[in-house]
Amino acid sequence: MNDLILHHYPMSPFSEKVRLILGYKQLAWKSVTIPSVMPKPDVQALTGGYRRTPLLQIGADIYCDTALICDVLEHRQANPTLYPARAKGMARILAQWADSTLFWAAMAYSISPKGAASLFAGAPPEAAKAFANDRGAMSVNMTRLRPADAAAAYRSYLRRLANMLEESPFLLGDAPCVADFSVYHALWFTRSRVPVMAGILDATPGVLDWMDRMAAIGHGRPQDLGSAEAIAIAAAATPVPVDPEPFQDEHGIALGSRVTVTAESFGPEPTEGELIAATRMHYTLRRTDERAGTVHVHFPRIGFVLRKAEA
Ligand SMILES: N[C@@H](CCC(=O)N[C@@H](CS)C(=O)NCC(=O)O)C(=O)O
Image 1 (cartoon, rainbow, N blue to C red):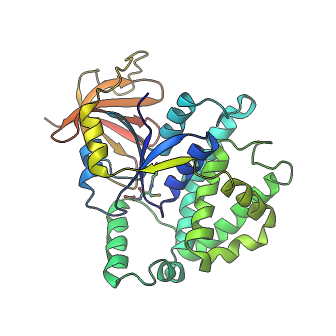
Image 2 (tube, rainbow, N blue to C red):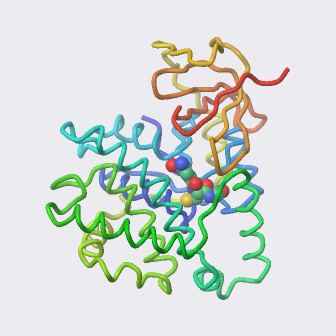
């Protein structure tokens, strides 16, 4: 079986979500550290454009977005499950809220001027500027919360989460599910990466205790790998043949068409390739790269825009 290769960087909250899931499922994985800002030539050699973090690579198959990565890891190692049968729908919907609404409130609060200053303390001023410019370019067409509005929303969300945790040790029961990992990563950023802003968590000690339980899960068994080696692994591998069925055509775009897939928001870089599968939940594009060879790049449907490529 091909290795699981996670392309990520330490400060990335969405990467922390996946690192902990790898730990929860006690999986061995290869760890490729990628840049947090553009340019990212080695990432884009694999994806063909998509630049967000993290990515999961398995041989010549590249999985974008943590919602899809969760499904892939569940398929690889079903126990313990991320999707408990009795709360499957609720777990996914809560995870989606956490990865969007909660995440952006937590970020806008944590990276308010005081938080940003502490995050970049000790780094050269160009680093903070490069980060701000990079994230500004990623956020075109997005409405970002102002810090004071974000703080108010974040406080309410924490109280609601604390309320859920009064009844059970994890959000939807006795064991963590996908929703716990999605909620956790946003709060982890505040607590671990911007401790000067972490006082907001003190009003909800039940949430802090749950965070301790989540942190104790750990990251599984990572082993460092260079990005050039990861590209060589893709080049030497053959993508897993995809089953194009069931083909769900919502766009009037036939399989075999040249298409682009782009994130709905945050990160406007499209990936272009041949559409070889469009199932109920996923798209798969085949593309060939000078260095990575022929790869299959996979996206979830939710959160992504499919278009015919311009001729
Ligand atoms: N919905 C995406 C969101 C990923 C995301 O926004 N990641 C942040 C880092 S935590 C990012 O890509 N930042 C810019 C970058 O790393 O280039 C997912 O679930 O993977």
